[in-house]
Length: 102
Image (cartoon, rainbow, N blue to C red; front, side, top):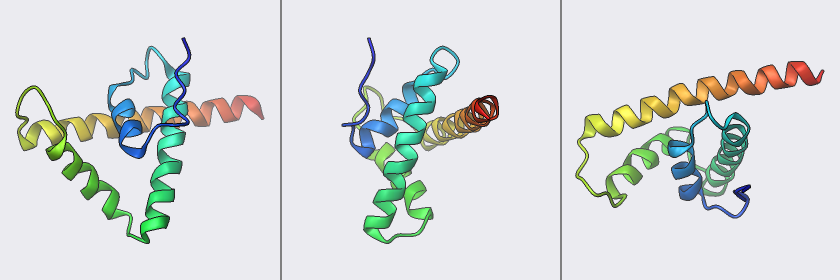
């Protein structure tokens, strides 16, 4: 079943990004990444904020997100680090796909 991410809010896209397995679903990860980056750019443009706002908002969102357990700050940083590594892998997938298309 194909998931329709087009109607996802920025927060829902962040949650999808954190949970998606880019090894098992590389095309889905690329789609979520592109939608997330577009939504972040639009939110930043709408708020006329700096790029650092996105990171700060992300950390604050993690503190306010309901969880079954109480995460420590190191857990949140680990989650952010994993998302960053995933982002680097997906950027490489996008570049590889674009080089194949040309």
